[in-house]
Length: 379
Image 1: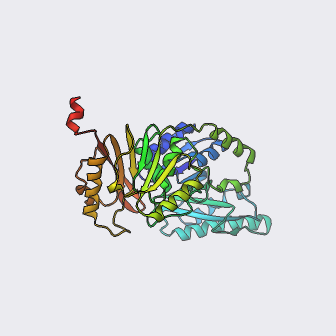
Image 2: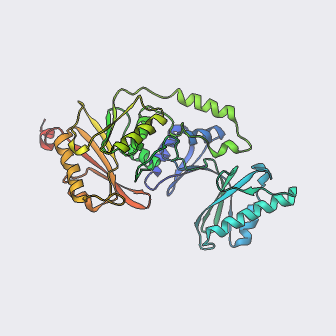
Image 3: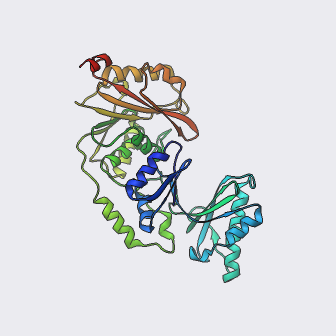
């Protein structure tokens, strides 16, 4: 199998797969390959926090032109995977000098599948782009073509709990990956001081309680496959829910917009996480740390891309609030506004390159000590 992910998440996804019990785990660029049985495929889709899709490769062959592509697709016995009464769709990823048009590759693939059924049965399956019974994934890398079945369907960032979003919501997989990179493990208090629609809070609570990332999702593509095993799937859900754990700290979200607070509360309710997460209307810049002991903070401030704000003043206030009101805090945030970082007025102890959509971003860590840094080291 192959799990797709974002740039910068390959190593943490590989670790997730190993901890889940995957074999032969290998990282590539934005992908991790591994092996496992059908039950493990179900488990991977349910649990992996940093995977966007889980693909099951069924054949790899060389392509030199459109005929070799057509012949390669035709050499697969498609009746193993679907019937002529079912629907399918073809997705294409292209890194090839032989082909430069993904639509053409998709069309050739569709023709080869349809022609095989028409020859063998006299009828043909239809295309359904929205709700297909089978999602076929074509990956062309130079002269190699890998044909896979998409076991996930919609991208796995569609967790199923987010019904309401704000102007610039963060992708759920990006939020989970940031939390894992930030070392969040549920062993301290947590704050997202600019929580928007609550995505980081939901992902933080699911990590803290070891709740499977996609437990709220309505469906996966493999549920329409010929070898779908409902009993096995139910057993896997039961065994995973037995591994959830208690959480003994607080998870809090602030947002200064009442509309955002309402949306975040709705999404936390949808995710059945209301016992763990508290959200309140609060301007971070007027706040101070309310709990004793260490605090873990992770957030996604505005970059100035979609929200029009005074960036210099805004990022200076982030730094001032850290220094003056949040001692003994490990603070992380992501931003694509690399210019604005110099106004924070603190030196980050870590910088990790990520992408938020197409925007190159940095995930930054700031260690805020009790008193000054020097007194910490003198003690």
